[in-house]
Length: 63
Image (tube, rainbow, N blue to C red):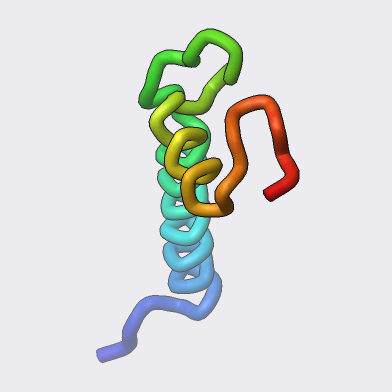
């Protein structure tokens, strides 16, 4: 008994790879959160965490 041809197997693997890439791109670039005022697309608590981590105040990017 013969298995699937190489062309058919390659097509299946290629379709699986394209589907996986599409899923990754959808998850990566989907708008999961509302844009915050002043920081479009980023949660303000994120910036508070970053500025506290580096010892900078909001509006001042130098530590």
